[in-house]
Length: 145
Image 1 (cartoon, rainbow, N blue to C red):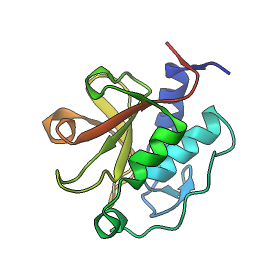
Image 2: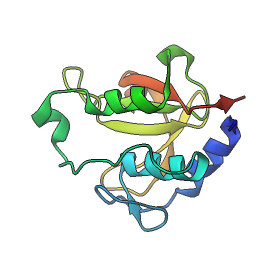
Image 3: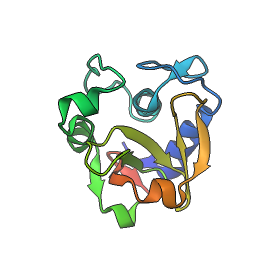
Image 4: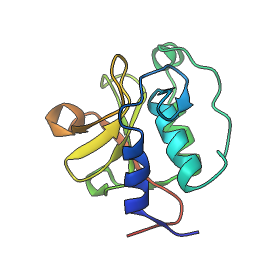
């Protein structure tokens, strides 16, 4: 099935205002950044390709492996970070020496929708803060322009 970038962006934006809830993935009820991606996947693609294992808020620091990037490579098409497009999933590192542990949807070259601890799902500027932390960019399977 072909998926248009505009469909992915619209699906992500429907989550705006959803409260942050660790490990949740229910629109308007609660989600974390992975839950947001899972929810948009369900709307745009269908059934999730694998179950997310239980994880703690500090999982990346304690495990020290690229669990999130590895999963993204299994289910999305990697694109060069400098070439990400609206509708792509962006993965971020909070610190240079730590594994990636945050996700968001690019809605333009300068903005994204994401779920962040302590806030509702929102659309924000990528800016220098987020831009320098991008660890990977991924397109949905079968995405079209």
